[in-house]
Structures are given as C-alpha cells and as structure tokens.
Length: 286
Image 1: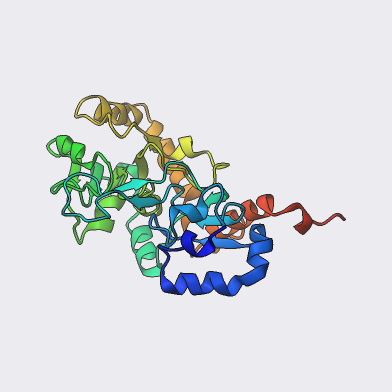
Image 2: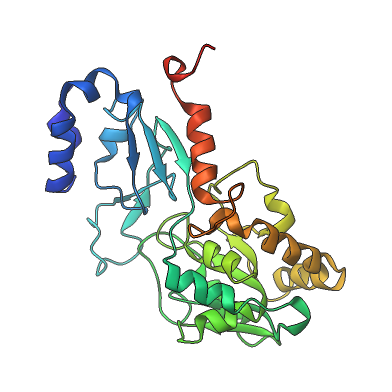
C-alpha cells in the first residue's frame, strides 16, 4: 500500500505526525484515535477509504462526511459548488462529536437564555447564504429568504446581536453550511433555543439522547413560506414548543465543554462512546 500517496493532501505537519507513529500505527491502526474538528479533513479521501490506513482507526469529528474538492479544485470563482461530500462515510468508526464553543462564547449564549414566554422572536437565522450565494457545497440557505418578511422571523446576515437574538427566539433555524454539520446547532442549544435542523445528512452526536424531544428536523430542500412555518407554528400553538424548550435546557450540558455536571458533559459522552468502541483486547476480563 502506498502510504505516502494516501496522505498527499495532508498538511506537512500532519504528515510528520503520521510518519512518527511508525510501525505501531501500521500494525495496529485500531489503537489510534484521530480528531478532525471540521469538514475539511487534512488527509486525502484515499486515507479514510475502505482500503486506506485509517480504515480501522477511530475518528472523532463533528463531520462524518468530509468535503473533497471537485474539478474546480475548491476555486470559489468557479460557477456552482466547488466541493463535494465524500461519497461514503469514513470506513473506520467515526464518532460524531459536538463542536467547541470557547468559554466566552458559551457564557454569552447562556446569559441570553430567556423563558419561552419572554422570547419575542419566533424563529431566527443569522449567517451567510441568505443575502449572498453560498455555493461551496450544495445547500439551500437561499430558500430562507422566503421567510424574511413573515411576522416573528429574523432572517439575515450576521449581527453583533447574534447571541441576544438567539436567546430571544423560540426556534433557531440551523441550515447546512459547507459541511453537513453546523456549529449553529450547538450555539442554539446553549442559548436555550429549539434548533430546527435543515441538513439531511447531518449525523447528530450522542444518538442515545432523545433528539426529537428538543430539536426539529425538516428536509432541507422543502423550505417554503407556508408549510415550513406552519409546522413550527403548530408546535408552538399546541404547547409542544414549551416542552421542547424545557428539554433543550435539560440536555444542553451534553454540548457545553465547560459543563461541571459530572453526568452530563460532551467529554463524558465522548468517553462513553469510545469505551463502547474500544478493541476487545482493551476490555477487562475481570
């Protein structure tokens, strides 16, 4: 197997790390864990494919389908999407993990968390892709423009009042970005806002959690200004949104890396999943 070819696209620093792993990695790749904190993994698609050197390793990442340059080689001046998602998830065990919000950002979001009755915005999204095309990968953020004029909706670009508006919104719309995952999900949860996920291939972390109790999933290609807002309105009018908000607050500690709750933290959740995936020889026979 041509290891150097597999890592051709890796950064020079990452290639040095892999070379230094040496024989131990080559003979027992399942003993190694790799962390990729975003959708751009610093290795070629060959490396994590079925025959690649990482095929038996564990991978931690908020993204389970990393993006790969298309024929446009990632050139944003090329018309249309210039990146694609890998055709299949990494061959090895990929553990979806929450992305990290630093203590300043996390505390700012938590401080804006209002009770549902005090939230004056029905649903919000603030970010790229609404006012300007966002075409590095296929997504439907531009469809959110149809919601901008609806009562109670705050749709637009980024604003310094970002945390304040999320904390004052009942629902936070979480559309797909460049990757299938988006950091907006975890910001919404920290702000006590019910996330509405618009990303069909987003693999959520900690699948054992009751996600349907504190989040909404909607097909990303089916956002309109009638059916979609109507669904959210029914959740609110039926009282279910109030229960979902309560569940958001209950489970947000699973996504807060600064959580002091011993039984509820992302580090605890990740450790539990790694324990379940560890090779048999690691497990105690006692």
